[in-house]
Image 1 (cartoon, rainbow, N blue to C red):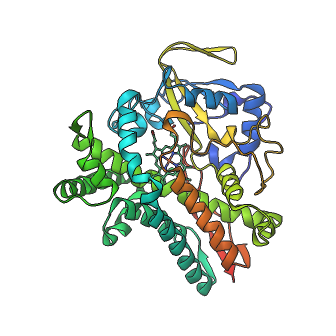
Image 2: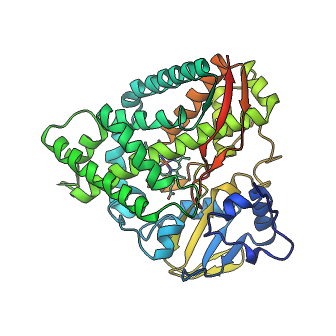
Image 3: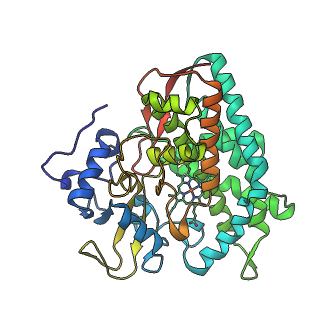
Length: 406
Ligand code: HEM
């Protein structure tokens, strides 16, 4: 893998819309330069897409996340949709809805994420992770992504949504086609078809839950009301889609990243094994270190000044979590993987009104993986180059050959 440090020639040569940039560049070095030289940077237009702003400092990223009065998510919240001008799920899916309706739908969904509802789910995550790791240890060598990590969060979110067990393998397959491209050659049509299959699948399940509701998130969406009226069919389906995608991909990526980080940092692996680090702190450091959602974005509703530059109403603004989480102003010695790091004010789950709905579940997955590795595994060996996800949005891996020894 080539690791090009951006040259002194200028940051203008970097194309943040191109997934290759995130595979071929030394990202820590690149973001350090953005923070130091161009913390509020206007990215030039690329291939027909308009210019957009790039915020790389923790303080600026936080300020925009927090400010849903002057910045909206309703025209998209990731580069791909923001640059198209609109998200097809706008004002139907929680993450791309703002204002009172966002609050109401969020409150409705939050009921399914209360500690009481999640208690059995948490126990299930620990059980499943432990059992899969036991099987992995029997095999010795395996692909940690496809043979282990891929099977954990999909089942958690599947339980929470009441997705029949026999359908889950199919959903993992569609999720993978939707998000886990490995190169520019992967077909965008396949990606689009898989997305439609997921929407169609949930349309059927939502209709069924309307008739026979159960104790699951889909039933809560299908039978709940906002302002005295039920949610539209599209609202239900798009929110199911966002849960299955959001609930699966990022959690998987942080657990895979955790294994790589522990293999690369034997001192931290030892500290974890010896019980020298507090589990809560270790989970937060893994989330900061891996930052699966590299960016989110907004559109400015009015002119706003940030860092001496004026963002105009209508401009697209991207917030780079993967830079903010290594900002030396906030994190002393940011490139040190330190499981005991505290405080740890990372923005892996965003911040403010759209703060991740599944943060508790995301943390649970990392916690379960660290606990299972600690109690069962003696030695981690990475056997080849991890295969990186081809994306300008999710940072992660689609393949990781490893040998685990008890
Ligand atoms: C490590 C795992 C995870 C990471 C890193 C992550 C990251 C994020 C981030 C950064 C946001 C903010 C988006 C924005 O401001 O536009 C977000 C929102 C959201 N996440 Fe997660 N997420 C994770 C796990 C989950 C899980 C397990 C679920 C579902 C069960 C989930 C569902 C959602 C939803 C529905 C939103 C939208 C919330 C809103 O707009 O009010 N996420 N996530």
